[in-house]
Length: 483
Ligand code: NAP
Image (cartoon, rainbow, N blue to C red; front, top):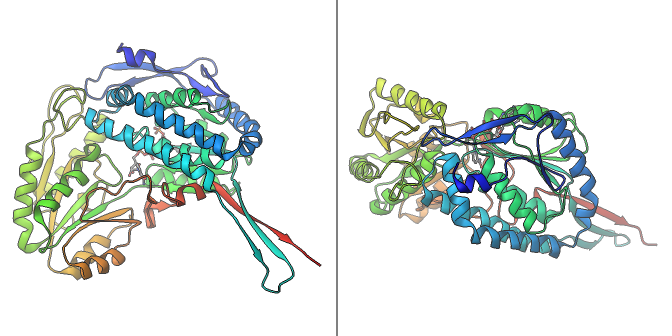
C-alpha cells in the first residue's frame, strides 16, 4: 500500500474519535488510473448515523456559544495545515479520484481558501437594531446557528465540496454530519483529522462514509433535531432529498447538476476564447458541474475556433494522474466512462464528427481522450445531458437572439460562459442568461469570495461569498415594547 494511503484514517469519525462501523464492515476504495485497490474504509451503518446525530446534537449548544473568533481561528489554523500539507493531500486525491496532480494541487488550494474566507466571516455575523415605524417599540434582529446539519458531498471535488460546506457551518456555529461520496472517502477523512488537529471540538464534525447513502442519510434527515441539509450532487438525487426534508421541514441548500453553454461571438478575442474553453472544459477532466458542456460559436468564426480547440485538446497528455506532464487523468469509474462513450456515440450516429479523440483508450484505467465534436446536430443528447468528461461538442448560432435561445434551452441553470468584446452585448446577455453565474471572457468562475450556485434544476442556495454563511444562520428578531 502507498505510504500516504497507509497513514490516512480509514474509519468513521464520531464524537471526536475514529471508530469502526457497527459490527465492523468495510468497503474497498480503488485507484481509477491503475484499477488497483488502495485500501478498505469503514462502511457506515444506520446505527452509526444515529450515533453521529446524538454527537452533533449534544455538541450543538456549546459550539454555538463558542466565541466567533475562536471558531474562526480553528478555520484559519485548518487553512494553514492544508497549505502545509498540500502535496500529500493532492497525491491522496489523485490516487482515489484520478485527476492529475496539477488539478489536485489546484483543488487543495481552492478548498483551503474556503477555510480562510470563512475564518474571516465568522466574526462578521451581524444583526440590526431599529426603532419601530410607530416610534414606541424597538426591533433587534439577530442571526443564530441553524443547528446540526447534514452535509452530503460528491466525488468530483472531494475536498472543495466539503470545505465550502464545513467552513461556513463551523463559522456559523453549527455542528455537522458529513456523508462523503463512496468513491472518495479518504480525502474527506484526511481533512477530518486535520480539522481535529486544528482544534475542532468532539461532536462538531462527524464523518460517515458508507456503501449505502440512503442507509445513513435517512435516519439523519428523519431526526427533527437535524435542522439543515446541504447537498452537492446530481439533480435526480437532489429531488429525492428535497422530498426527504419535507416531513421535518429542514432548511436546504441544493448544488445540483449543470449543462453550461459556452458562447463565442465573432467579435471575441479568439485566443482568449480558446484558452478559456480549455479551462472551462478540461478542469477536473470535464467532471465538473461548471464544466462547459456545449460550445455555441458564431457562424463566421466556428471553423477557426474548432480548429484551434482541436489543436489544444489534441496536444494534451493523458495518463495516470501521478505521472509527470499528465494533464488528463482517468475518469473516476467505468460507469462514468461508459456514459461518455454513449453520449459521443449518440452524437456521431446523428452526424457529428470527432476532430480529435472520440474513442476509448484501451488498457488499464478508465481513460478517455480529450475530444472535440464538430457539426453536432441540435437533437444530440450531449447538448442536453451533462457529459461529465473531456468532450467538447461544437455547434453554431446565427445571431445574438439565436445564441441566447440555444443557451437557455435547458432545464439547468448553473453557469454560462460568454466571450465578446461588445460591452452592450455582454450586459444584455449577462442579464438574459438564466444561470446563477456567468463567466464574462473567463472560463473560470469558482471563487471562495463569490456566491456559487444555480437556478432552475441546478438548485438553490449559495456557497462562498458573503452569502455562504447565511445558509447556516437563522434570522430571528426580538420585539421590544417600550412604554
Ligand atoms: P450523486 O450520485 O448525486 O451523489 C452525490 C452524493 O449523494 C454522494 O455522496 C452520494 O453517495 C450521495 N447519494 C447518492 N444517492 C443518495 C440518496 N438516495 N440519498 C442520499 N444521498 C445520496 O452525484 P455524483 O455522481 O457523486 O456527482 C456528480 C453530480 O454532482 C453531477 O450532476 C454534478 O453536476 C453535481 N455537482 C454539482 C455541483 C454544484 O455545486 N452545483 C458541484 C459538484 C458536482 P454515493 O457516493 O454513495 O453514491
